Image (cartoon, rainbow, N blue to C red; front, side, top):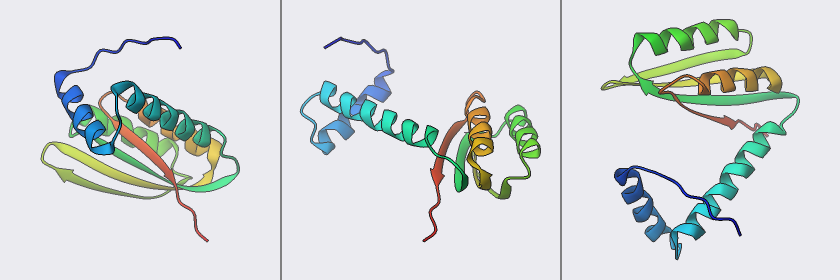
Length: 130
C-alpha cells in the first residue's frame, strides 16, 4: 500500500484527534482511509447525477465586498435555476443558502464556480421530494 504524507496545522490535527477518538477509529490511517472513501463516494455521486434536480448550495465566507461581488455576479449569471437565496451575517461571516431547480449540468457549473472562490466554504445537497 502506498504511503502519503500530509501537512496540517496543529489546530486541525488536535480537532482530528478528538473526533477520531470519539468515533472509535484505532489509528489516524484508519480514520483517514474512511474519510477518503467518503470524499470519493460523495463526489462520484454528485458527478454521476443526471437530469432535472432540486439542490441546495450552502456557503460560508468572510464578509468581504470582493467575495460578495463575485457570488452576486455568479448568481446573476445562473438566475434561471436559482429559486431563492437566504443569507445571514454572523459576526464577520456570511452564511448563504441557495435553492436551485434545474438541469444538473447547470447546477454543477454554478457549484464548481462558487467552490473556486477563495475563502468560500461550499457544500451541496440534493433535495429529494417523495
